[in-house]
Amino acid sequence: MKKYFINWKYLNRIIITINSITIILGGIYTYTQFHIIKNEQLNRENDLSMRYYDRLNFGDNKKIYILIEDQKPVLINAGGEFSEDQLDDYLGELHDVGESLYADLLDNRSTCSRFSDLTERTFENQEVQKYLTKIRKIDPEYFLGVDDLYYFVKTCN
Image (tube, rainbow, N blue to C red; front, side, top):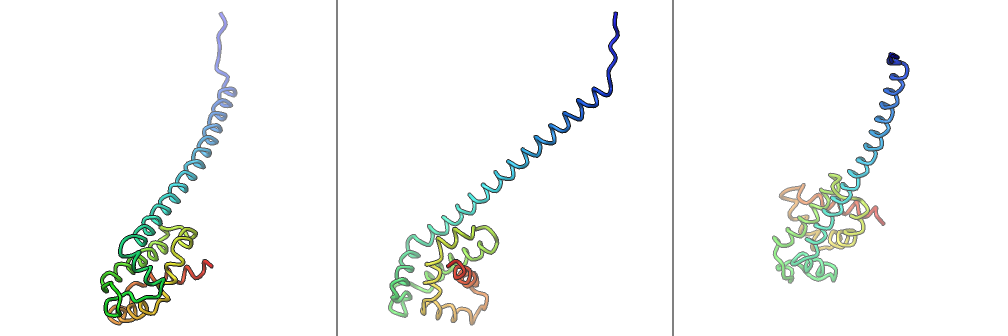
């Protein structure tokens, strides 16, 4: 009867091969997980961007933007149909977009494509500027996200 002894060199080679395969498979898995995470982040950014876009293009916010676009008065005291609170809500949405952009929660490209015209026309509107000037006498940091968003979208063109 023949006795078989373990050849340690052969066993060592098998262990090294298994370790190498494990490292390669781990690298491939890490690479694919990185891309999955990156795609999920882009999906979240686009989802948030679409939510802001929907809120700005619905109800009173849409009507306010149409008045701004047509260069008509917005506020009741200027002959428009909206209160300062309603304009405040509209500017609050733009402020949130600006804050989200600088917190890296929004994609630069989608922000440019979705909000550039709306932000530029709103920020350059005289009535909006008067309102912002008036309100910033009380709180100088009020709606600075709108300013940040405006200066960002100016770089998009």
